[in-house]
Each structure stands twice: as structure tokens, then as C-alpha cells.
Amino acid sequence: MVLYILTGMGSGLANVPLMGLVSHWFQKDTRGRAAGTMLSGNGLAIVFSGLMVPWINVSLGPEGWRTGWLVIGVISLGVAVISGILLRNDPIDMGLDPVGRPDPVRAAAQAATDNSPSVKGVVSALSMNPFPAKNRRTGGLWCTWG
Image 1: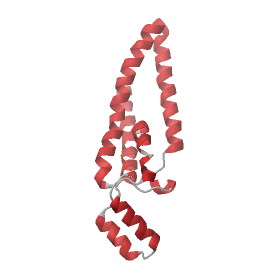
Image 2: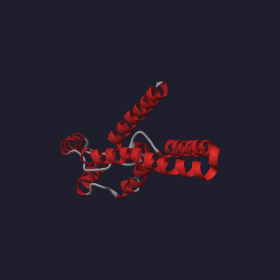
Image 3: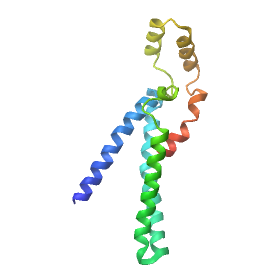
């Protein structure tokens, strides 16, 4: 029973920061889809391990359970290392803008307070195209590591 409690706490503590990460990387109009895609990774991982572990157990006989846990551990460690290398708290850290249409009220307020041509150009470019080309390349990252 204690292990189930620890597993539940670990799952909850993993999802909360990831939802915060999604709120930084996606605007309001795309945030729900991004969160759903990220959370679908949990279900896909359960299906994958449900297919992989019994196959390993049958293939390797009585010692197959150890190999099954080792494979799951190696995959988890690999995903953690790659996520640590690729993911950042904010898209600005990577020179990117959040995915989606900017909030028109916020964009208008920022354009009114900042008279620099570069900010006005970015705001107008984002309002015309909800998925700027430089952000399109992060979709695979979110689908894979979310």
C-alpha cells in the first residue's frame, strides 16, 4: 500500500510542473490541445509497457522480469536525460515565441507601451500566423517528450 501511495505522489508531482511548462510554451488558444497531447503520453507509455513486459517475460523465462524492469529503467533514464537537454522553462530561453495566437489585449497593450519597431513587427507577424515557422519544429519535441 505504501508503494501505491508513493507512486501516486510521484505521478502527481511530475504532472504539475509539466502543466506549468505547457502554460509557458503555448498561448491560450492552443494550450488545451498541448496539455491533452502531453497527458496522452502517460496512456501510451502504459500500453507500450503492457505489451513489452509480457513479451520479455515469455522470451526470457523466469529471469525475464528483471530484464523487463531494466529496459523500462533505461528507457526512463534516456527520456529524462534527453528532456533535461532539450526542454527549457520558457521559449524565450531558446529564442522562440509561445505557440498560438497572442492575446489581442496584451499584444495591443505591449505595442502601445513599446515603440520599438522590432516588437511591433513581432506582434504583427504573430497575429497573422498562429504557428510561426521557428515554433513548428518544437511540435515533435512536445509529442515525444510530453
